[in-house]
Length: 303
Ligand SMILES: Nc1nc2c(ncn2[C@@H]2O[C@H](COP(=O)(O)OP(=O)(O)OP(=O)(O)O)[C@@H](O)[C@H]2O)c(=O)[nH]1
Ligand SMILES: [Mg+2]
Ligand SMILES: [Zn+2]
Image 1 (cartoon, rainbow, N blue to C red):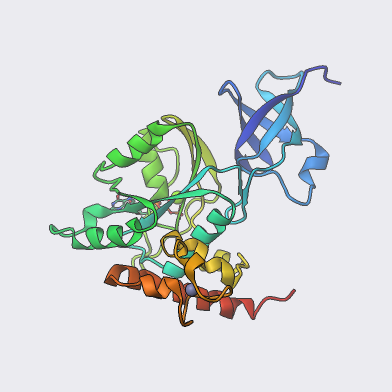
Image 2: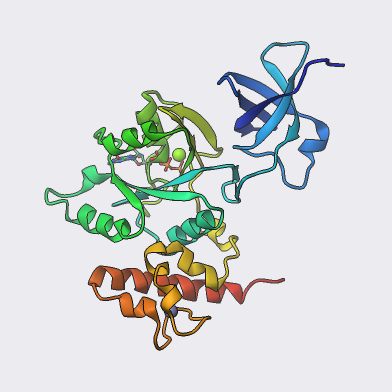
């Protein structure tokens, strides 16, 4: 029997049924979960705010006895109570997959999680930096964007972001975009394993297998496993949600003539009318691809 009172913490890491939790005072403890929590239908995950008691045997070993209600929840990778998702997008390799990006952005915004974009590996750009300029102006229409290189320590924007305010932030992105390299560079130590891309396909090798929070300036920053095409297919998005991934285009929807306008082809669509510049037109075309992708995926769902 323990007589200790309950205290609160959040889960920074889960590996093989063992938890690392961070207490309100910032102390790191190893923890196990009480039986009924282990077999709950929604298992404890990184980011969960929990109640724990200290076990009498050891000062640094805790038992998780309850899980607080989640503010939000990302399913792939499983993460709870995130304030912002910093989506890492490689300017070069692996290649950008707009459908996957849109799906991740949509899932996060549905959960009221803010998005910022980190365009990585700018050191691979040519002297004119034409590609970085173009890609960043494309994404800048809708999101706060930073151009970075972990390799060349070009991280000023992110280090400033890390000092802004206390937040829980998850790094997310395709395998191989450089999430773990970025985290290691920011923290000045090799906390997470990194690995080169496959030489033939220029794809990441799914190196990171678990999510983990680290203290970085004022924020808690989590590295996460890179997502894959398989993950995206499981999001179960609805066509009407597609516009969420394009906040810059969503601004105009109130002016559309039809209430159920899909903004892909309808007459008197305010979104289509707003597509005057080539950049916005390109974003709208990608929106249409995303919308049509959701429509075709929806047909495969079994309810
Ligand atoms: N040129 C260049 N290469 C980079 C940069 N950042 C990361 N890389 C390389 O990209 C490869 C993948 O990096 P990781 O950090 O393992 O990628 P990840 O996003 O964590 O991948 P997963 O854990 O599989 O999701 C490694 O070979 C890194 O050296 C960069 O700024 N510039
Ligand atoms: Mg990684
Ligand atoms: Zn419309």
